[in-house]
Structures are given as structure tokens and as C-alpha cells.
Length: 244
Image (cartoon, rainbow, N blue to C red; front, side):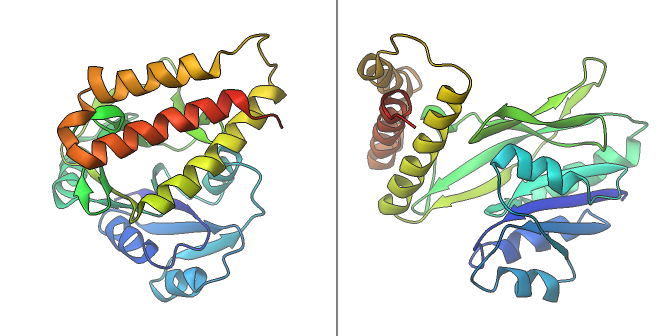
């Protein structure tokens, strides 16, 4: 199929091989844009036949848009290095492209795994993402570190079956480290775009916890649901509390 698989990476040796192999099931090429890995991420990707490029990291949105410039197209499928296409999703993509008259953007559900447990409730589910689109007809936007695909108003969006399998964190410590990192990035972005006079970080954090754990039934995921809701609330507090 005329799809370019695109991934950005930094020290993803443990997970990127599964990502690349799943993309190769539906893509004519796989492009990995590395930002200076110190492990064997680059070597693993090259051994698998992926095209590897380097670009200094300026932000998730900037890096993902830069990665698109290396794609041949005419379609592009973007995954994170810790994501894998499920077998059902692979078959759904193949079926969609056998009937595709284009141009169409494709949206797919993402199923997130935390510490070996698939998360079915709370803030992480449902989690639908546009990840497959005609090259040049969409781009990455949003506000770092939370990127999203922005499509043109005339580009139809079709939902696919199957899931992106997202292997997030293997330990609570990994989640805490990433949460701290993302909160610092988000705080800088907020101040760069103008800071509101009164941000109420504690109230925002409390509402985030209540929404994720109670309203979105995160409690049904047990201990993992509690941990995720707590860390989301903590992230929200830091985002509005930290100064750049």
C-alpha cells in the first residue's frame, strides 16, 4: 500500500522494534526520526530496513511535523515508538485501502497498557486518534507536549476497527518521571502563550481527579485507575503551578 510509516524516537530500544515491524505490515517504507539516542535505537531500526534520520528535538509537535517531510506518501501513518498496530487494525487498514478512493483521514482507537494492565476506563479510554491521512492534507498541532492531528475542513474522517496498542509505563516511577517532564513542558508553553492572572491549580487538579476517577469510572481499573487519576491530577497542578 502507498503508505509511509513515520515514527519519532529517542532511546526507545526496548519498544521500537515491535512498532517498526507492525508498520511494515502495511507500509511501503518506515521512517524513524531520531533526536540523539544513546542506546541502540538507530541500529535496531536500520537492521529492520527503516530509513533513519536525525533532527535535534525542539518539541513533540515540531519533531512530528519534521518527520513528515521525509515521507514519500501519498499517505502517512504516524505512530509513537511505544505503539504497535494490532492484528485487527492491520486488517482494517488493508480492507479500507482496498476500497479507498481518497482522500480520507482514518481515525483509530488506542488501547493503553499500564504496568501490564490494559486500561479500560478513566482518562485513557476511550482514546481515539487520527493517525493515517493523505500527506500534505493534515499536520500536527495542539500545544506541547500534547499533540494532535489537525485536518482540513473538507477532509472526511473514517473510523477503523482494531486498536493501536500503546505500551505506556512499566512502573509507577516511569509514569511519575514522564508526568514531571510533561508538566514542565506544558508550564513553559502556557507562559509562552500568555499566562492567565489566576489559574487555581489546586481546584483544577481536584476537578481533574474527580472527572477521571469518578465521572469517567477510573475506579473500575482498580489500583491502576487510582494511580493514573492521581498522577493526572498532580500533572494538572504542576502545569498551572510551575514557573518557567
